[in-house]
Image (tube, rainbow, N blue to C red; front, side):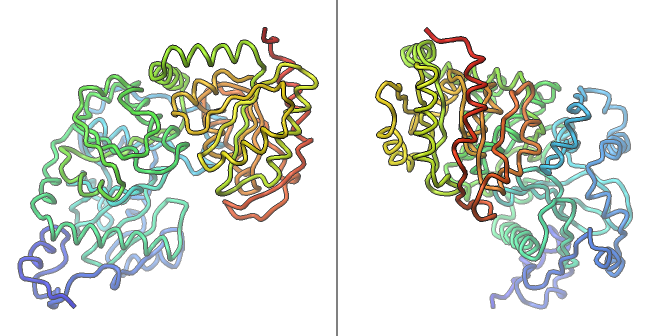
Length: 504
């Protein structure tokens, strides 16, 4: 085993409070091997906190995203400065429980970090209000905010929903799982591995690590494009930036770190960001190191709902990105046909009968309405499925292919269609959250469960009609294939298409 040098021992003490040089016992500090993981939601684990000199009440305040508690901390630490800025209204009361059933929350810390450039909490031992001294990107899912209380500790926020996930006190070899819904041994191991990686990075790059302590107050650096999920990019990150713009807090942003998972470039959607210095990473693995050079407190802007204004911005950015010729072709297709968007999948959660099912549905629609056109949508691995469906279609059904086109063009086509049949997932995000059109969604039973909150995510959206879960056969795992009788799609499609004005 590697021996810890005296200099490294001094750094461990300075950065993480890991005892005096003699306490390290000459070995490399390894949080993964030594860490105890407690879960705040388990009564027996809560009772053990006293063994570490911690208060369950104060630890619970670290887990809280209560707006009243956050406002109290702002006033205690920043005084009357909290009167500046705009507090935007939460979604309507009836919408909030539905969104929260997805595990999304309105995170009051986002405004605090944007407005003041600091994360606020209390010491888990004494309850004294604290302001963060350093923040660190751990991976594509987590940011750690560093505090100095009775112990040096880190509050980890993250996952797609941006919630408070863990509290780590390296000097006590302790990790406490907090309010995030994902829990268990593997989650605890993951988070201790992340913290161990941060500790190792601090020993390898001490100058850069110290630089992160000196971030100026009142400023923040946005971190976006880290997760390979289109829905969460728009639902959380784009809506989060939209909320900062609307509340007047964007002026505190002094830099951005952007990963490769953006779909629509944030500067195209928000021209207000155009003057900011941007660091772009082509791989997620580059982002933690790149974040060490950012000038201020890190913030992944997490929103709860896609606004009408954001959708208008997305539409404008998309139309600006495609050629006038292509825009005219899409408009002509829409004017001449009742366009039906069909979402194809091959790699996972695929409808097993999609070839015969989609072909049969489209042929019946053509028999009734006479001017149907199909818009094929899907990943590049769906071209064989597309070709099989096309071979089964009546020859007078117009075909339009978006497989492999730009995201901006997909938005334009989604605006042009009469209706859609999409799988619950990325395809449905475009049709329902980003574009206002009526349509039908199908999926395996695990994904159909998202129907309980789906229609609450985007303001002013046309509610999606979901295939009934009891009509679907297949396994219950999240990405399993499934099947259902295509005939159950017909009544709703007849209803939607009959309501549309007849194309010329």
